[in-house]
Image (cartoon, rainbow, N blue to C red; front, side, top):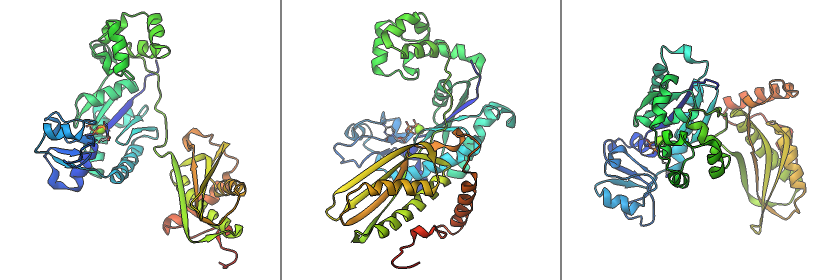
Amino acid sequence: MVMRTILHIDMDAFYAAVEVLDNPEYQGIPLIIGGTKDSLRGVVATCSYEARRFGVKSAMPLRKAVSLCPSGVFIPGRQKRYLEVSEKLQEVFSAFSPVVEPLSIDEAFLDMTGCEHFYARLEAMGQAIKERVWSEIGLRASVGIAPTKFLAKLASEMEKPDGLVVIRPSEIERLLISLPVKKLWGVGEKTADLLRDLRVFTVYDLRRVELSVLLKTFGVYGQTLYDLARGIDERKVEVTSSVSSIGQETTFDEDYLDFSILSCQIARLVEKVGYRLRKQNLKARTVTLKVRFLDFHTVTKSTTATVPFHDDDTIFSTALRLFSKIKLKPVRLVGVTVSNFHTLETLPLLDSTAEANALYKVLDSINTKFDDTVIRKGRTLDQRKGP
Ligand code: DCP
Ligand code: MG
C-alpha cells in the first residue's frame, strides 16, 4: 500500500463557534443553532459543547432540544456568514498543502505527503495548522493525521473538541481490531444491520468473514469493507472545488429586444464570470445562459464542451450561441453561469493558449487592483450609446 501522510481537519461545533466568535456573550453557554425556542418544526443544525452535555445533538427536533435544555439559547443561524468563514478556512488550508479536498462546510482532507520534514514531528504539523486557524480566524479545530483517509478522519474525531491525534503505521493494528464496525467509512444503519445478521460487531469479527460472503451481501462495497478492516484504503486526496458554479445575472430597468444591446450585456456578465473563474484557479466545461422575458417566462440553455476553458472569449461565444437559439421576446433579465469545474492542478501544464492566458493575467491583475472590471473588451460597450 502507498504510504501517505493525510491530515483531516474538522471545526468544533462550527456554526455555534462562529456565533460565539461574532457574539462573545454566547461564550460558555449552551447555544443551539437551528431556530428559536418556539420554532415548532425545526431541527438542530448544531450546538455548543455546553449544550451537548444536556444530550442535545445535530438533526434532533428543536422541540426535543428545548425539553432537554430549557436554559439554552436558541438561534436560527446565518448560512451566509458560515459560508464566508468556510471560504477563509479553505484559504488557510491551501497555505499548508496544494492538495486540499474540502469535504463539507467545515472539514477537509490535506495531503501532506512530502511536507513531513518541515516539522519536527507529525504532532507539530497538526499543532501548526490548528494554531493558524486559531490566530487567523479565531476558531478551534480538531485534527487527525494518519497514512490513509479513513484513519485520518477517525483520528480527528477521537479527541474532539480541540483534538489532535496522530495514528502511526505501527498503531493501526491495535486501533482497528477492537473498532466497532459502525465507525468504518460508509457503514450506516442499514449496513450495520446486515453486519449484525452476520454476527459482526467489531473489525475483529469482520476479518473473520470471507471476502466472497462480503461481496455477496454488499456487492462491490464488500471489497471496501474487507480492505478497511485490514487498514487498506487507497483513496487519494482529490483536489476538488468547494464551489459548484459561478454565475452572474442582471435585471434591466426596461425591457430589451435589440440583439446588439443584449449581446453587450452578456459580454459584461461574461467578464465578471471569467474573472471570478480565473481568480479561483478553475476551468469550466459548461456554460448556462438564462433569459427571462417581460412575461416572466424564463428559459435556460446549457452546453458542455469537452475541453475545459476559463477565457472570456470561449464563454462569450458559447453564451451567444445559446442566445441565438432562443426565440426572442422583450427581455427582462439575462444570466450567465459556468459550472462543471476542473482545477488547474489536474490539467496538463503545457497549454496551447499560453498567450491568451498571459493576456488574461494582465487584465485580471489590473482589474483586481481597481476592484472592478475597469479594462474591458469593446464588445461590452453599448454600440448605440457609444463608449
Ligand atoms: N450541520 C447541519 N445539520 C446536520 C449536521 C451538521 O446543519 N445534521 C452543520 C452545522 C455544523 C456543520 O454542519 O456546525 C458542521 O458539521 P459537523 O458534523 O462537523 O458538526 P460540528 O462542527 O457542529 O460539531 P463537531 O465538533 O462535532 O464537528
Ligand atoms: Mg465540525
